[in-house]
Image (cartoon, rainbow over all chains, first blue to last red; front, side, top):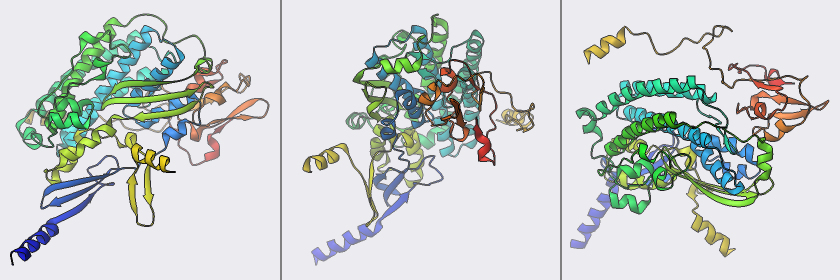
Length: 406
Length: 107
C-alpha cells in the first residue's frame, strides 16, 4: 500500500511540471533566443537554451576575403559594439605585422571606445526600464543616447558602423570644434545620467529589481562570466586595467573598476550606471591629454596589408558587455587562414541558467535583459536533425571527438 | 513630478519632421558618408577600389573604368579613401531607396 501511494505522488508532481517555450520571437526580447523553461506553478525549475537563430557564418566568410574586406565585415558582427570588434581585430593584425600606431591614433581609438560604452550602457538601461514597464524612462534614456550617436556621426560619418579603425591607426581626426562639442555633450550627459541614477535608486524601481536573478560570487567565478555581469557579482575583472591596450595604460589613474557584491539585477544595473560616469571621466582625460601627431601611416592601406606576414595572434579588449577575444591567423598573402571570435555574451549566457532558477515567469525578460545579451554576436554552429526536428549545438569537445573517431 | 509633466507638455517635440524635398532635408554633418559619386574622367583604372571593396560593389567595366552597384554598398568609404585621383567621393545624399534597381548602378 505504502509503495503505491508514493508512485501516485510522483505522477502528480510530473503533471504539475510544465514546459513553456519562451522565444525565439517574444515581445519582451529584442533578439531571437529560445528558452525552454520548465515551471512548477509560477516558479522556474529548469531552463534550456536554444541558440542559432541568427547564425550568419561570419568566421567562415572572413576566411575567403582579404584583411581590409574582413575589417568591414567583422564590424557587422555587432552593431552596438562595432568599434570593439574592429579594434580587437586590428590589434591582432598590428601584433602580427609589427606595425605600431601613433599615440594620437591610440587615444582616438580609446575615445570612440568609451563613447561606445556610454551608448551601449544607455541602450541597455533603456531596455531595462522598458522591461520593468517604465516607458517614460525608456524614452528619456534613448533621447540622451541620441546625442552620443549624433557625436559619432560628426566624428566618423556614421552613427553605428563607425569604420574608425584602419591598419596602423584611425581614419578620422578630431578637430578642436568637435572636441568642444564632445565636452559640452559630456556635461549634459553627466546631468542626465545622474537623473537616471536617482530613478534607478527610487523605491518603486528597487522593489521590482532588487534580489532578482541572483548570481553569487562563487557561481560567477565558476561559470567565467565577464564584464558588468561579473562585476555585479563582485568579481573584480576588467581588461582595461588588467591587460591595458590602446591608451588605457596612460589613463589608468582616470578610472576605477566598479564592483558590487549583491549579484542581482539591481547590482548589474548599478555597475553600468556608474561605469558611464567613469567613461565620462576617461573621455575628459583623453580630450585633455590628446597628443599631437599623425593619426595613420602615410603608406596606403593595401601596401600595409601586403606587409603583414604569416602568423597568429590573440587579442583582448573590454567591450561594453565584457571581455572580447579574437584569435587571428593570417596567411601572409593579405588573407586570413582562421578567425575565431569569442564574444562576451557567449560567456554570460551560461550564467543565465543559475540566475533564472527559482524566479517567476514574469521575471524572465528582466533577468535575460540584465546581462545585456547580444545574440547576433553569439551564435555558433548548430546542427538540426531534420527527421526528429531536434537541434543541438555542437561544442568544441564534441566536435573534436567526432573528428578523432573518424 | 507635476512640474516635470507640465514642462514636457509645453516643450517642442524632440523628433524632427522628415521633409523629402531636396534642400530642406535634415542637415547632415560634413563627414557624413552617403551615396557615392564617381567622376569617370578622373578615373585612371588602377582597380585599387575593386580590391578593397568589402561588399563587392565595384566591378571593372569597359575602357579600364569601373562600375558601381550601389544597392550592395555598405557605405564604409574605403574606396573613396584609397582612390589616388579622388575620382570616388562620398556625397551627403542619404536617400538611396528607389523603385528602379537599375538606377542604382553608377558608371
